Length: 521
Image (cartoon, rainbow, N blue to C red; front, side):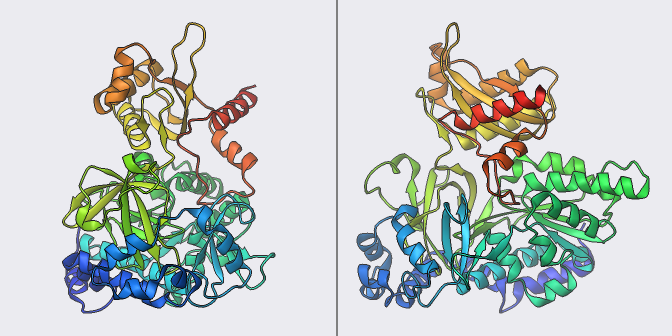
């Protein structure tokens, strides 16, 4: 419940004429003007770069309709279009896509040697730091609960390190870059674990060190990816029982003042019930954020509304492509004035790190345009349409949640892949699921998912009614199977390493099933 002091602080924060919440108030009052001014500023600042001269940024910035001029002159880009220049920037080239030399790089996917590695300017690091502080201040303002400021905050950032191939540069997960640039006051007053522990290279030893360091601390806020929070918090309980000779089964017994969980990286909705049960505090608040290597995009500004407010003044200019047009060579591009609630869009961004009309790879859906609020509906690669069923990641996740709601099951992790037709069997989707709490009847669980997908997806329904497609096949996996797969297939596992949710190919599913067979055997 809000306190009197909290309500007073909230009122003051909302009225301050400076700071992160003042920025939020400004773009909420003038969203379109904020984005237009931001784009002009980005173009003006980058006009003398190689990309600025290539596309005529200076001329675009002077145009009366800067957004239209930008669309006409600057094509949509993907990582393949940036890769060669990203390598040059890592080698020390200056003024390529953004003024000056960039020394920080975020691993967007894969590894630092072979994956997608994106430049992160100092301006973007400062923007993301202000964004993070703003999330905390907004939570204080809307909750009226200042108690989280009286204890420690525990984060689980990814690792960063000096790049041995490119001396003088740092490379790693964006969460690690952000932790390395945390304000001095947060490190001094709130940081529960020093960076020398948070950046340990061996993931399992890192978790163990964090647990030992924090067992007897007054942890009041958690900031981390929900899937890895489950792993960490179970270890907290086990280690606490081992050290104190007790048999507690919730984190609230270890950290009785834990107040708020700030989530990012994966959809919170898939893990919230599990976290609530494991933590064991009915008054725990959850705040969801949406950030990526490319920038920090949105945050939950209202605890009662799971949709997130799109941050329109954080060094990121947004464009959107209707997901149905994404396959076209030159798809229509929409600004904020043209987007509609309920439509799935792929966002393309231009940023103060020198990304220009760059595809993030996510799928967003607006729930509101006054203010602009979104939910993340998955990845552009998260769709299975092998047999004309066209099931999106958002629909699959919602079907799984409905099956859990009706059966009382809890899911830890999952992956979906098509299962082709065979003698006596129709094609279908095979769901590989690690259950935290399995359903008593797997057939009923599959039936609930099947009915839900038929209700929300006409393509799926038609194929089911025509008996051209079977109901989902559920394959329970032993606990730890996905983690074993991650360790086997990734150079390193960190708080940002995720299990791919959907694939139209079977290479992930077959590898996971092989591991599961080995574990069961």
